[in-house]
Image 1 (cartoon, rainbow, N blue to C red):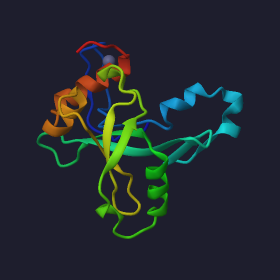
Image 2: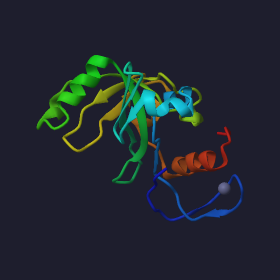
Image 3: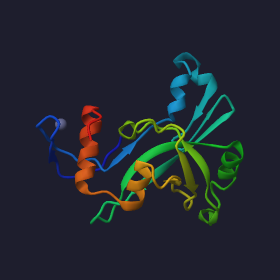
Image 4: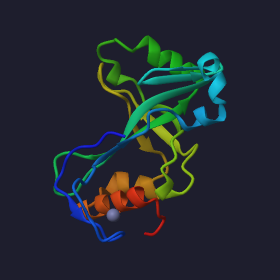
Length: 175
Ligand SMILES: [Zn+2]
């Protein structure tokens, strides 16, 4: 899990001072990988920092869900994985080094990371927006009424970023 250094915060969960307020969280692999027993992963899973294929049949791309932070230049980032169709995966591969690929129309994906603070997020529908060469795709939540979709469209406050940090640090579901 990578994170960006910020000034710390007084935690309302545990009452301690935490030295860092992360504005970025990322998942190293799609969630589906846990369904493959450890001793079979080498045979059945192909994974890079950006792509994953399971059993030559299920295809995943890593991307970013950006939430504007109100009053700040840099967004809050969920670094997550989306399952995509075989055709979309092949297309993304063909365009991997293609200049201008960001002009591709968005395509559908389904979230394959569990952001537990929003409950069950597996298979949440996404629109995948291809970015210029060298950048991971951006994902937007298709349903504007899903809580994550709302935060993506309206942005979040730094206080909300702290609330997220507290829930993740202490794995609690309190809101
Ligand atoms: Zn705490």
